[in-house]
Picture 1 (cartoon, protein in one colour):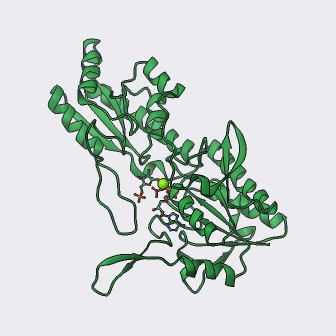
Picture 2 (cartoon, rainbow, N blue to C red):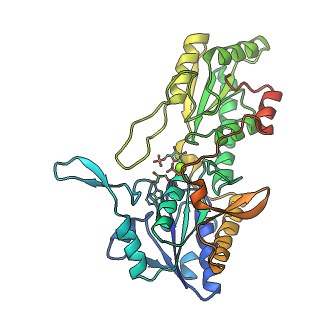
Picture 3 (cartoon, rainbow, N blue to C red):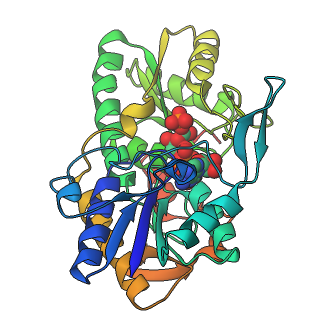
Length: 358
Ligand SMILES: Nc1ncnc2c1ncn2[C@@H]1O[C@H](COP(=O)(O)OP(=O)(O)OP(=O)(O)O)[C@@H](O)[C@H]1O
Ligand SMILES: O=P(O)(O)OC[C@H]1O[C@](O)(CO)[C@@H](O)[C@@H]1O
Ligand SMILES: [Mg+2]
């Protein structure tokens, strides 16, 4: 058996642990393991694959990033390229990718990625590739999956950052607005916001009104709390408002960001209080994975190889109700997992007095 492994989309803490577990579990079965560099990037070059042996994955469980490199601009069905007139367009190079797999007699692909990577995998499955998916993204937004690798580390970092910003907010009697990642889902904002005792948490699933936040700030002032901590997801938006974005590059998803600044300015105007905004950005994705992420990544990586061994393809290995399960990749393509407004976590936020902006 010859398998290939790739990592796609934004990097996340735990990717290397998943690569290591998949590689070691495959080598243990006497299989050959290839790595694809930079998403699917190396496929179109003279050296489409590298060899992954024991030495290649030695000591990488604790390393951030991915030893394979990744890409969030390189969907084989919409590959960006520069046209003769200097403009950028996209083209479908998926046949070239499928042919390279066939020429190199690759029996199965372990695709480690987020929702975007699973959409690509789903289309490649329909073109005849045998794929097993591993759910990765700090955003925790993959449908059918209780938790994705990278999320735990991201919320730990965000929680620590919010804790630290709270002490300066209190000292300066300021409104502090902290912007966290998560794309169109509020998992990072909600979990880190609750854990760090934020006063206001704004998530994409609950469009917010400034009136509601101002009321919360006034309530706190009346109690002698002259500072307010506001956590905002990058994908949050005002009721009847638009997403705040930084534009789009051809072949890449729209870049979100800037909502914290907007909220901070508006709240200063409305309350007369001094405000500052902080964007946590890629801090949330970098560095060594938490213990939880190391373990879940190792479990996902090894489970993917058991899937291959059983020829159980077109499956994403997932955690559901604390058990490893397998779900068809094609069944989750083009879906996303939002925060449920009925969840006990949202109820907890409300019960302990966190304003959710509605
Ligand atoms: N293997 C890959 N090679 C090149 N591009 C990829 C690959 N996998 C995914 N992409 C592209 O990267 C983007 C994001 O992918 P995905 O949703 O899997 O990642 P993510 O962890 O959610 O992070 P993010 O969306 O922010 O980059 C999508 O536009 C997708 O087309
Ligand atoms: O690395 P980039 O292109 O800035 O991507 C940022 C995006 O990737 C993620 O970090 C992971 O999906 C999102 O939370 C964020 O919107
Ligand atoms: Mg994504």
